[in-house]
Amino acid sequence: MIHQHWLDNKTIRDVECIHTDAKKYMVNRALTTGKTYELKNETEEFYFVIDNTGKIGGYYKDYFKG
Image 1 (cartoon, rainbow, N blue to C red):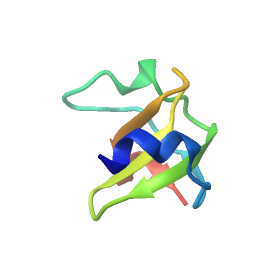
Image 2: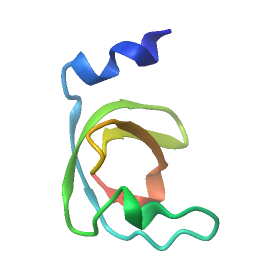
Image 3: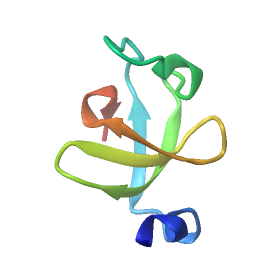
Image 4: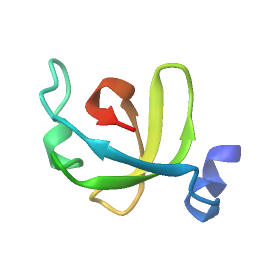
């Protein structure tokens, strides 16, 4: 259950949100266009960042530049 410790892990790098135009989900509630977020983990398809709620959220990489 490595995901339970991501909030305390060292930040890998910062990534900038470039859009919140989601086709299926309401991403604009948790991300803000133009804001920089701390990247805590990543997979081939997702970035796991500390979002606007203060918790770790997994989002498609196409929402970010970084």
